[in-house]
Image (cartoon, rainbow over all chains, first blue to last red):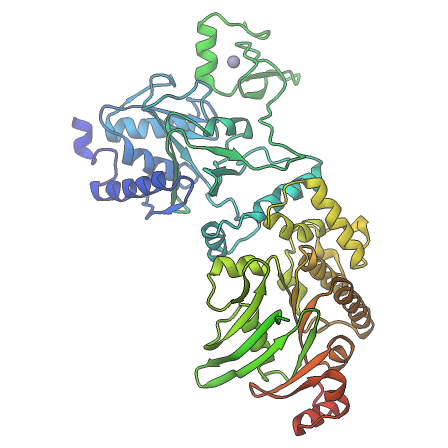
Length: 286
Length: 256
Ligand SMILES: [Zn+2]
């Protein structure tokens, strides 16, 4: 425990962690409700997931195994730096395997492998308020939430259809939680929205700059908003993964050579690697 | 018959300054009430007290609700009052930008109240929006344009469509023709008169413009310094004013 002698466990002091845990518990008690909390300065800039980092710091224990993904990948600069931050400040074990992780911090994705009971998924949230883009006044959006006045959410979807012929919102697609609060699921692709609901894991959302925490306890009902004649669709690129051949995972389109050659690969690198290790091969696999 | 709206002893002070004092009247279904006076006469304070934007110090504003009959809207819960204000009530602001979402298309502006009360069929919402644009004489081809690209008169007509789409029974109007050119005003007044008559709307119109009430209002209240100084049938009050202040108003000495 030499490392933790330099820092308090997981960087934050115990009083701050207690304050954040209280916000998390309140969030779990009122699924989808944005709980204000006193966000602390973290040794990384906003936009690097300081909200998620504070939530992770408050829930991590020495026995946890920690995974960080950014757009599905474990090896981006952002993911690597957050993982090493907790290796240094908490001394926790880390992993890239979704199945082995007990706490997973994520930016922009939900892992493909179904989560299980006992796991905690921590989302980094840039803008927690789903009504923000049409109603900038915080006093008014707070009232809309408290009075369940959510017509404005559908105005946004209406505008989408009138402009594009279909609901063009493909990230941060708004959901209604347990028939009560409308929630921004963070900028995950709408492909991931069905995984939000009825999930065995605990899902926690942290917005650092905006100082909000919200949560989905296990097995919560989460419904993506839509119109009767324009129903929600969890769409993805209509291809199998070039490396592992999966036809059900969310894909990134990557450029593979100077000639503009492209291929579609799983955005969840752990999922793709595991499938390849099991012998699955896509058409572009070496 | 039950009045649609019964205003009972409504007073509102700002410190020692009187906003409006002990105002009472009944508005009957299908009736249009005009409230005239100079700026500072208390007519806007009274309107905002009736529409739930201001809380009166004393008095009751009793509305004959569809579900539960007469209810005091001053003491009802805020969710109930807000529900009323997007279903059975409408409020037309003097400045259209106060009553419109300038970043949302004309169709979205008209559709918002429908969606607020649970409409979830895009095609139906769009059909209703198209129909209402036509009723306020806005070309259906403009349905996806933002109101910022509209003229002042069009913006005001869009605000009216956005308010009337849910079939309210009572419409509050605050200087609805203020700031518009005279020719634009005339067209808007004709449109309003037609809509009020066709829909059997009840309305309360606050204005300093006697031409507006002459055209639209069945009855008239004249306010000065927070008090109602004269009330009666519009033609009677305008053609044979009894109170000295009304006589001044009518002789257009005070007309702004
Ligand atoms: Zn793959």
